[in-house]
Image (cartoon, rainbow, N blue to C red; front, side):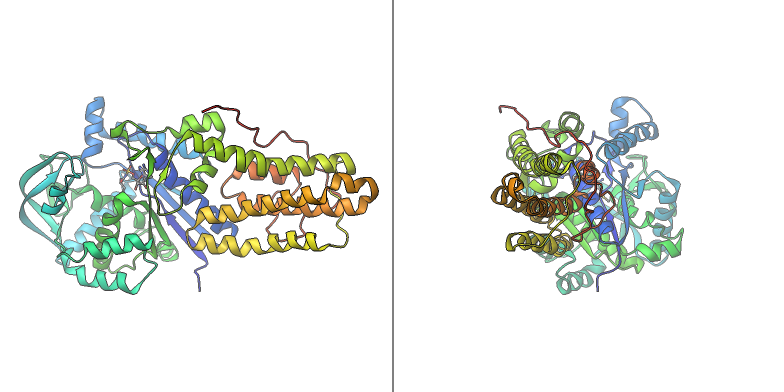
Length: 501
Ligand code: MSP
């Protein structure tokens, strides 16, 4: 049985950077999933936040000549403000400098230390300054890491290697734990080599922007060990057992494929050590690329989501990002494909359907939703498609195939457009007004249901459609559109973009 609650997380973003489309994507995706699950009647907890400790943030603050905390305060706001603009309905925004989180990190460190899972040792190895972690010989040779140097240091280690067998068995027994499948295989492949222990401290002389180890005050906690714990701080680990019991384990950690190992291996073994259940799913999505390369600040090829939203509105951006990327694969961001989707899906299909039905109802029925008479075969077909949508959307959402949930809904929209063309209610109205009324009822009710299932993706525009139809707050079942409802006046939903690329 699926659980009646849904706890979804995004990665917590580093505050060393302006948020870009890549960050916006994961957060929009989480929001769309959260909204779908709320619409399915589940209790939802949606956690996002920012990752404020560590070398990257310390360096970013130094570069700007401000104290790290002041830097974090400023940058955390950039994220939360962007989420507001993007209509992100999170339940909690966690900052790792908050006392509630520091308390959890310190309590966990103390507990693992007391139970013998954390020990001191000298460590010599290759260290990637850019990645802020020691890397293996193979990783060094791959050439994928920048700023690599030899480093010997006395540090504190988490006995991660001890949990290797347990982790392999765990992953092998569960097909849905690491998704998609290719990522699961990648991690199982990674776990074929012996798993070392994890260095979880940084001497303060090298880095002091972090959470002090409770048993060794000359050290701060490695930023990943600190950051991953956000997922349990959010729902109240240690602080509120009842609330924590209600939400943990998380239903899904949404992440980009760049942080798969830290989540699948570091985090899972930390949870084993704490005796906590693992999240049901870790889902790694692909990258937004510009041309062949990952969009990232260091490559200078980022798209600023605010510019896009200012120019085209929030809903088209949410729609494009979630419809265009097949979850799990990489996708290319181009303005050309954005405009194409806007014009074909939003202007021609969805916006046009609203214009048509409201225009025809205006002209032939004084703007009042007509009653539906007996249904013809063609009418039944639309009703059946609309009735079948709920299950299709629910299946797609449960399988993290958001693009498919959207596509199924847009298929209904296109089906209705073809139906209206074929039935030609503007002609029928001249001879048989009752029949024309039935056609328009069917088309409008189908549109209402499509709008309902597009609400998670386009909370503003889909709701605007429901406002026009006097159906805000209605559900996804057939027949809820009330005959006699006065349609509200409206502008074109998505005026076509006449932009030559
Ligand atoms: N702070 C860590 C995460 C800690 S989670 C306990 C971190 N932060 S980050 O700011 O670098 O953001 C990483 C996340 O942003 C990626 O995992 C991914 O979800 C998203 N993206 C960043 N660039 C991206 C693309 N170009 N494309 C898609 N998503 C990308 O890592």
